[in-house]
Amino acid sequence: MPYNEDLQKEVLTRLRTIKGHIGGIEKMVEEQKDCPDILMQVAAIRSSIEKLGVFLLENYAEECLLKAIRDKKDISQTFTDVVQQILRFLK
Image (tube, rainbow, N blue to C red; front, side, top):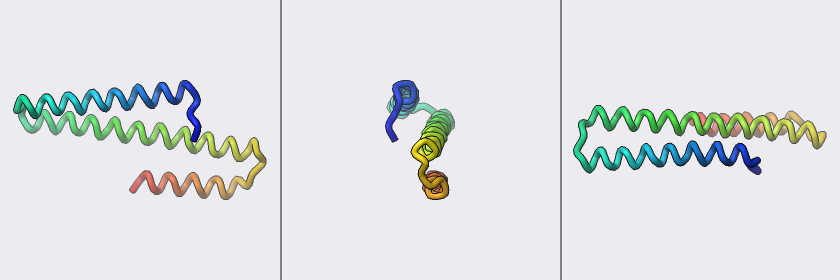
């Protein structure tokens, strides 16, 4: 999926935020912080990754379906492809 400039900026911002959180966890481990505190940060990262995936999936589905409509392609096949991608993401 080609990224428009705004989408690319949003994805990179989210990825950098996740990367920063991971660095924070590394520091917490090095400083021997309490396990519950580290687990809370891991949960926050997991949530951020999930939200990024949903964001990408939403944009992918919209772009694929709009492109199929613009190109007057078979919507049913595009819809099937999008559903398959959703199912892969959910596994």
